[in-house]
Length: 372
Image (cartoon, rainbow, N blue to C red; front, side, top):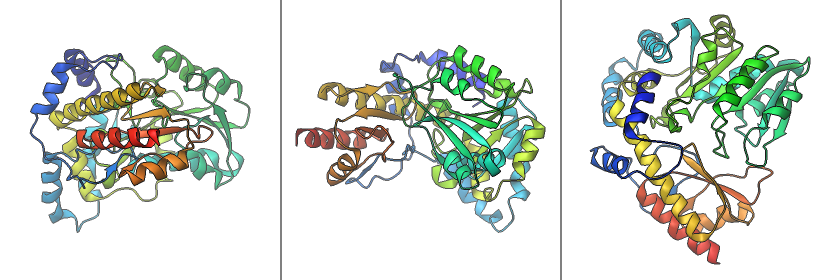
């Protein structure tokens, strides 16, 4: 779904950042006939922010038909996907670097800008793949604690910029807190910081943002700024197991990053991504089901009087008041898998949205654990 189409659909659907569940949206989600991932019935896997409904029927059909070309190298089917992504983002194909999931893109960027003592600035906690990988090659990471609302402390991050700063990493919406930066503050920060160093905007959860006019930092890439954006097919498209994502950057930057791509992706993932980009029905279905599940989580947490952060993603970060390692063990006994520890918030837990059956298991399990 093109960004312009997405914005218009969000307005039409009546979605907003209020997180109030919409009856019309619920009906739409329920009316779509789609083959869902078979449930184990006994285990709710809610620890990896996956989309339990994907890939869509159309994507599965496309994957099956692609087996005839799976004996060939990906270069045979790659160009049309590159053109589709470029059209979606409103840039040239020279702006796009396709990766084996967005994580490969993050690591390639971390390697490019962090090697041999390069310094990276990032929020803490946030998604760590880039930073931990870069540290293996000699990078120094300035981890800036999130603010009192668990969002990026942009002012402190800007103060950390020095002559050795090679990159600023922003995960927006942030993982694991689910917070969303004010769009004006985000844009102003990226414009200012990009005059001093490279800025990376991880937009893995961008599709779940319900503010219709919230900008992607691809807008700044189009203005030839020192900005790199990552996106993925793992979340809203339900293709986490297929490993495909992409970076958007100025052509000279993209060319440099391409040299550090290692795994790339595969024929089946490429064909799946082509179909996913035109399957608007499943895109809308995924967003609607995510809102439904997220509101079910809110209802459980509100009933139990547990503090949580209103989320702009497909997960919710909430305070249990109990050590996360203990919570993980106790919830697993109730057949619910929840997110890993996110220092320094050891008494907080991250729960992914799942099917409504998963949400019922979560509700039942959490009530039992919190009573014990």
